[in-house]
Length: 331
Image (cartoon, rainbow, N blue to C red; front, side, top):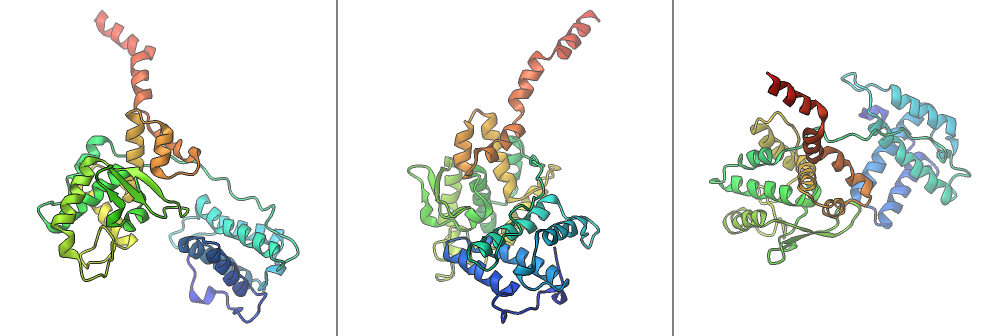
């Protein structure tokens, strides 16, 4: 939810019990306790949104916030309309409110307020949505054929796409991937400090390793500019690690170029890998380990997308098909 500079909270950090001061202390506490910078930045953003909303109503200290005020803020989020007229999704509303629950819990625990007004705040129920698009095996091959491998950057891009497809790693995990993370002899790659700051080792296929090997021999040495990028595996044309947005645009462009009528970017490869491996008989707990999911319920989403086996059984056993066959024989 965007806001102008005029909407920023302005109570300042001078008041040690003010919104800004206690938000800053909370974010520092998160960092000290090894929460990722991404998590801390997200919390700070949504807490600032609330502080701005509260200040417009004359509320500048957390001790002035009650449960009815938080419920009023929740209704505000529900009725809020973006510049294009669209409402906030329930996922977005949830993201605005969840940091408030964490913050007020911290404030209470550290005796900045006497009671937690957010303890019984009911967050929006989130719908469980299936991935909008998943690539079939043939469609994945079409996208993989898009980079012009005769060109330096095309060869690099093919290696990156093959890595996404083979491992199902997240965008930020590929961005941070180091050269030494690959173990060609064992056919594995070590993902350091993935989501939740967890390491994991996942298999990587021979084909992906072969493309990465070509990239390492033929492309990466020419992209290196001093020690600018360190040991980062995939380098931009400037000899630096990719930014998240640049990688997103690059992968999206190749998917669009394939003209499949399907849209997506880095995460589309993750969805597709999990779905195709399930359809080919992989155990769901293996997929859970590959994707780095802490909760099996998250992985089970893909069992709903992986419908091919169910379709085969439906085609073979549904009586409507048998009836059509009999009707055809009678003609």
